[in-house]
Length: 299
Length: 243
Image: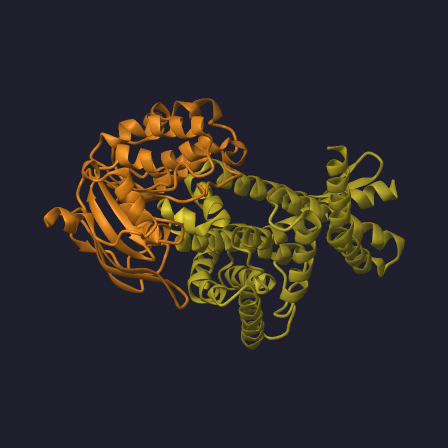
């Protein structure tokens, strides 16, 4: 039962990773941009919620009502001022510019808030550690379950947005062929800015759950980015439901790793990521090549 | 007054001049055919008018307003639509989505999903199919339908019959028949010379990026157009008619 419990905890943890990764995946899928400042921006949102909770006694869930639109605006401005300009200079430049942005954000937060670790857990009552105990001594934490549900809802919402709305159609068209999209009246610039704003909405929510379930400090953004990046790569870059799958694989691997050895939590996650990365790079390519040859011979 | 006016237009690919000193005026409802060999600059001219190729010199005036430096999506919203060479559909999106995305132009007019499907009935059963899985003829119908969904005043058609079977070409032109009778001005680039002469009011011959001849379609013979097409005739038909 211990292993079953660990797998359940891993799946729930995977929901958190999916939440963290969906903005990164969305931006890469739509614009082909890897936002290195992704984790740092999540920490910015966490600090905003912390200030609201600490200074104005605003519950973090209520605080999201203010922080989400602010982060959407940050996304819009980020695209117009940084991403759009740097993307014109080539594929690598947005990586460099967002890396620079991450450094600026991290150090600005350090200057303003200091190196102390903070958490939103004290502001959400007992939700942080409340849980249900199921038969067989299986434990389901309330906050992890809410996080998982929010991740599924968010990914489902993004999926519906892309498939069922006019904005979604415009985003998909501009993703495939921005020139042709413009020919049918799509303002690709505005669409990309809107997509960045949407990604920042998910970043704000991810930052909130990070701050509620654990602690955060000005320099934790890099670590969050690594987890998000691993979930995206495992699930397939740009694929929304793949991101959920990637998050779950990463979460389960870490959870089982922790059960095997106390230090196995991070190592197991990174090992699974590396194995899948190598498989994606070599095995699937060779398999595709093999099947192509096989098909040609069959013909 | 002309609906669309191109004055001394220049367009380049790097140092290579693809379009040189083009002067062209198109009236409302006029059907103009651009003919010329490969590399004559026809496609570049259409792309420059539509706003997806940079203007290196000259002006483009539409409905009296200078749109030389206006972005492609704004030109589309003001009534210029291009059916690009090779269709350029969004392959993973369904036919319906390909058509509906063109509503981004937000122009009022007779063309909407129902009227486009009426004009191109071959698309009705394929509405939910990904555009990338359609036949060439159905893809071309989708591309034209998508441009019509923007309710254009000027429709630029680039090589509509390219890569299509004769049956598919016939079907596409049959559907275009209704469009040819409307007030929408059409600039058509087409390799099929006979069809061009049949549908156009005016023929404009291009060679090496410049206009070398133009005249009313019914005044030009197939041989005359062929002469300009291959550059063996340099005297403009318009000049000859004046003489």
